[in-house]
Length: 448
Ligand code: FO1
Image (cartoon, rainbow, N blue to C red):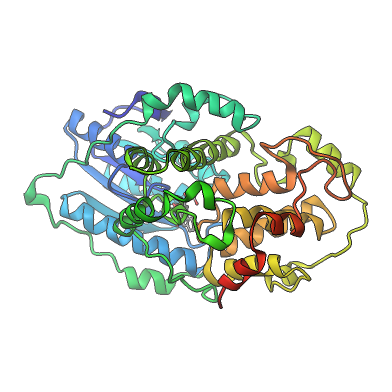
């Protein structure tokens, strides 16, 4: 059974006959998906059929063909898996806030279920749907191991305050996840034909930012990627975490971002793995505390992508140093083209543009240098978010917003020694990187 703490009733609604509709949005997978499982529970409980719909928005926070290609290929696998189970999947196109209410009317749905997403645009879509329907509407947190709305009712100051709640509640939520029950075989193979090629051809998105080749989209590839990481990467994770030249990261974030892989599944498998305990602990801290703190940040900070979301101490210190002279100042085009004086920063930017990825440690250095080399924190946030959301395969994600707010605005961090431009925002520099890892070796790994 789905833990009631995962379920948030958005709309009481009036009882109505008709199917249970799962509006798949963030968690684009069949297995380990609590929103799908809850929708199926509702369908079985009330003797209704179950259907799934995804609403494709022509533009999503600057996403390009790189990201849409990855997402659509993953959705194609969702559709074929569901149809083998006799569960109908349909893809509609447009603004979900308008399309979902129309779709509900057209199929006479009786109950609506969706998954949890703290991003502003997704919350706006849900508000539009709530204002336009009168059936029951449930939101289920299938993205976080600890349901974001239930685990904390406020914006957590930092990881150490959030970690206390995680440690207390984890055993309640980090449980095995039941499978989806296939419908009667007679219904298997039912499909509403979807013209996937036509959909991709019609997309009005930037095609110059091409799909990547270092990671395959979809649930199957994600499961294989998790197994490979546990087999080959988990043992050395703690040792390699802050060495970008070692490629020691899990590489799971694009699958997690598109919901093609469940973080709960990752945590269960890592917990069971026979690997270095310190590495398992470090990895689970990143996966659970850091990642879920980002959802908490976006849920409770409407200005999560603006300096307005920074803590008061950070706003004060950045204001005090607003007019400090900048030794270097670059335009967004110079940043985009990796045309700064810093070969380390340029290498990270090349990785971002060419491959849609960047090592976790370099993401911090990369964003902090943008603060140092732009006229203001506002401009730095705008440049960092623009480049991150346009080129990262896992961009447009709460983790990205919290990570950039941490780097530029000290969110979830503390004040450090005061200095030019940064004020008391934690400083990182080239020499500090050289002390931590072989900078030239990292630069050499970023091939064109
Ligand atoms: N969510 C949708 O419901 N419909 C879309 O068409 C859509 C496109 C999209 C493109 C790139 C991307 O990174 C995310 C996209 N999302 C879309 C949202 C995504 O599923 C996540 O909900 C958010 O990025 C939050 O993690």
